[in-house]
Image 1 (cartoon, rainbow, N blue to C red):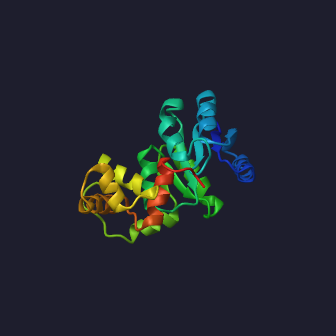
Image 2 (image 1 turned 120 degrees about the vertical axis):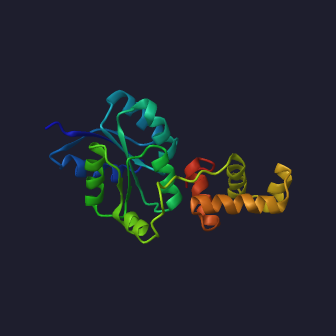
Image 3 (image 1 turned 180 degrees about the horizontal axis):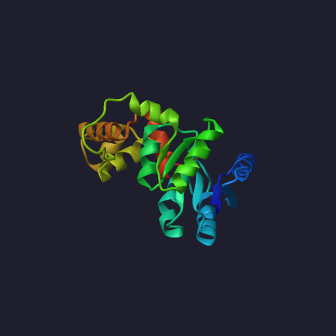
Length: 213
């Protein structure tokens, strides 16, 4: 059986080395390349055309979300497995919308990642069991679940708020009323599942509006 060819994109060398040991220990998998940031991941994906790319979210130069979006052109047949410590719903939504086949938490057992890799290799989607359990606790919606999309104005309000502007400052800058700004912010928070300023900042980092810490 031809092994699943895996590219690992992770900026921490120790973590990257551990992932390589884990994947290479599987009879049906092999690591064909490594990358310390999203930009290098794209370059190596284009060259190696792996079956799967493991993408960390918080990487320098280009984060995992930006890399996932660009991966469709670099390696269109590669399945993306997002590997991160972030369990925020907004992160999950953004990565899946960007084309990721799986979303796994770093704090979960290694079996979660292996299951995600095997599922992604066969064209399936996989969500970390911790996140899946959270989803099952919610009422089942009728019909297909569509990913909510924020408007351009809502995104602009979130970006300005994340970098430190007050509602009044944003209103003056966009030539809108403070009440309108509050409505845009509330609508965006509802659509993305953001619960407070910390969530807004995390979302801004994910979008590349702020530098990763």
